[in-house]
Image (cartoon, rainbow, N blue to C red):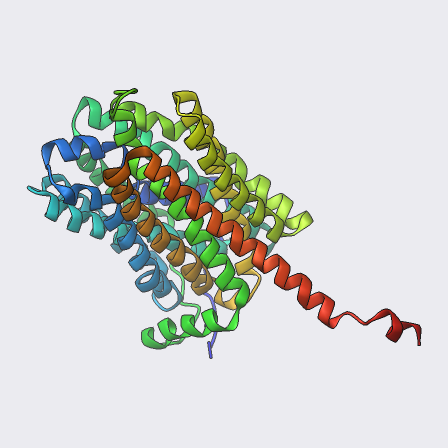
Length: 409
């Protein structure tokens, strides 16, 4: 059982500059897990071999591992120190990626990059902790907008830098960005005390109890894992798809596709407002259907315009479902929100790692049609989960509703 610890006496910090500093740092952190996607063609050309395709998978696995092993530390370790240390580790991991002499070491460095980049998920609960209760939702929304912006701009920046300077230069550029974000957090964040007195082992074990206790958590985690698998399968092979005929385009164009993802930034607050007024479950189901539709577009409209429309639908579906699933999960047990978020995001990035790995295999084995079939299967499975949950909920309500003959007596 958690024993809450009294928060530090430091006053809440909710000024605009403070929030934007945290938002920028979170965006810089999360961007690192997407740099490699538009650069894969260039990396494979310099470091040939089947291991190059594992780079996005290793990054996603590292991020998933960091979510489970590092993010819960925010409940028991002073958060400012933890955040600054993680940014330092991220800078070291980026240096290792920049100097990697072969694909195997680059895969290992990518795993470490993903692990350290979870510092973004340390910032989100800290932002909620430092905000006044009446402004907490707006503050967290701004941090999430920073994260989405980092995701959006990461591919565009990496594609441009890799095309005009080289893929190693992109990792080198990431080093001062990580150190700068760490310095910004060192200068702006106040000290805070842990929220729990649980030991590390008990903290991790408590997440298993949460998983068993809440069916809504399991549904949200599995649905988001499938949707993110469909998402990463596309982004992992996009550079290869654009490089091949009939497009024959470079990493800079693959990076420009990230700008299309601006729809994700617009989707997050919109989905949140709809979830508040109409309920989150319908928005999750809609996100799954839209994701499935995106793969129909990819399969039947094979021009560049089809890719653009498919990306819009894919980003809209994934982001709207994520915001709504967080809405569902955070309501389950407020005092365990960090761990609930760890489970949701951890499952999501495990799904992402699986999508990256299977997407690479599908591309090598069957080309673009194989990738489309894979992405469609992920989307269809997510829709099936939502439909099954809806039907089960209807049956449950019918079972507990009084019969007409009972109510007439």
